[in-house]
Length: 199
Image 1 (tube, one colour):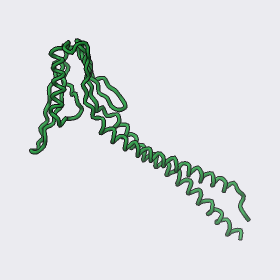
Image 2 (tube, helix red, strand yellow; image 1 turned 90 degrees about the horizontal axis):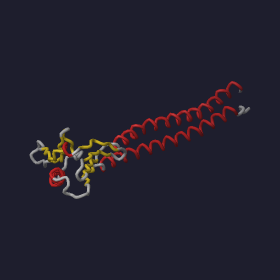
Image 3 (cartoon, one colour; image 1 turned 180 degrees about the vertical axis):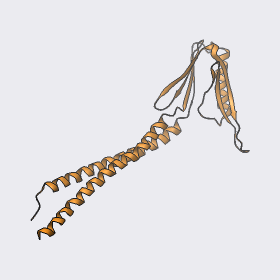
Image 4 (cartoon, helix red, strand yellow; image 1 turned 135 degrees about the horizontal axis):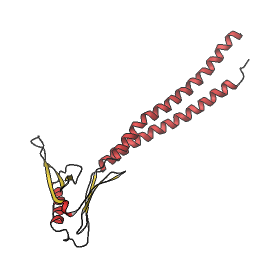
């Protein structure tokens, strides 16, 4: 009888131990699965998809690029450095494809796009270039008021980044649940090992 009860006791304690280790491994696995989603979410939310051009009367202009998480000063341009603005056109190789347009700031330091994306609306791009050219021709024409031009395309990165961020939170939540489950099983295992064997 003694020889037959020892294996049964070992078998009873092995099952809870296996469940505890499995739950702990599952918690780690969910963390590892959630990390790429979190990283990609932060990358998308940090995409600089908004361009701002602020010009002061009689002074220069500042060009900034913004994301949902950060702000970067592209450059500060004095009046002698400003050469105006033009509209670039991107003609697709497809016969039935519409042309795309992008306003570009011309300076002595090079060309700087005033939009991170190509625009389908030519009038919108032309309007941006026209305002910059009017300011370049007459910096004091607007009196004492400064103006701000911007093209904001952060909605796409916001939707994608939020979706991946939500998925990472779900995976991290499952990891916490598995960790609590592992903790409960491990406590049960320790209690089973500490309790004296039954006759």
